[in-house]
Image (cartoon, rainbow, N blue to C red; front, side, top):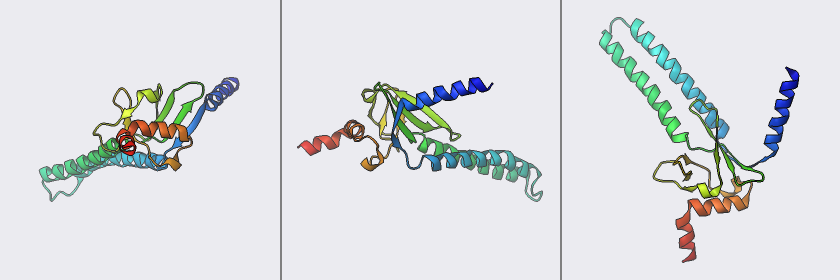
Length: 176
């Protein structure tokens, strides 16, 4: 249906015009590719290694082949899980929704696809806890990471307000 897809494109364009990009993570596309490659290689390992273990070198006992296969599969799963855990908070894009205080946060899923989280504004943000590779979190405790260099931001006012929230101790020491 050509008419239906035209209407969809028009509504998508109007949604895009209501958002203003204020931060674009420099490693977003690279990280997306890395996650996709990691999941693909993990899948190939999970499928291929048991087959190789079952039909591989007959000089090895079945227990030895099983141990090698298990070790390789565990390593593949472990590295993919670690990559996902470490990179999950990384913000690829940050948008301000025009006419409201809402913030649209783009991160990546395990498969390197876009995941969108909407925040009600800066009031929903607090400094991150003890989690590695995170700068701030929302009310639900979801951690997020952004680069804190000012030249990476398209909105200096938003950047300043965010840094005041996520680095409160630095503000206090500057005043003293």
